[in-house]
Length: 316
Image (cartoon, rainbow, N blue to C red; front, side):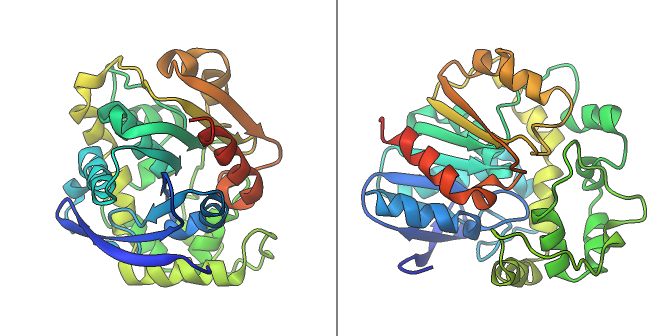
């Protein structure tokens, strides 16, 4: 992690931990679940070496950033508010945005709410999901996939935390990061502790030191803050009624793996590739499908993803 500097910034009423390296135009990286700024370690090194200032925060509820107690402190407005204040603190008007998983969802909200702040957006894994005015997202997922779909299981406060508590934190991190089963993640009814002694060797792109770093931070914070993002999905739907039918008017490049659990879920591949995604995001310039790559493509295919980011942002 040579040359990466760490500091704490006060944004939107919370203290946010930020990792950064380099000088030049700002490239802002937003991580997903269950991750940290650390998920972007490879991209920070590469992008900063190309003449950019790479900035990667721990999002609200994660790592060394504050973890507000109430569930309602994790709406899209709170988290986008944090990011807008962070951009302001960097002393720039605009940033290049790169985001993955929950970070990608926040990235889409950021592009909807404050497009003038984003020069271009490289989105990993989760495409723009337009608001369906007819039903709430969690209700729709429950109807489609059942009660054991992971997002449905995450809804009840304390329940998933209790399941996680039965297993070593390192095992949870390892199980999630190395999962390669395509399709919607359905959790076993008997709980998250079904593979408590996961002895599967780590893939080449993930070291024991990486797993230990993630685990050390989640032992400190617990998982409640990160799970509260899922618990606000229906609330976000209610709050964003005014953006029904709105398009994202920011230049976008989208990158996903062909084994990604999002890409291989119901209707998603069709949405991405049949023109509907482009209709919602008219400045979508490129879609990259990485062969043999699963959900955590920024880590699994780090070098390839870094080059894709650079090739896109250097045009602006």
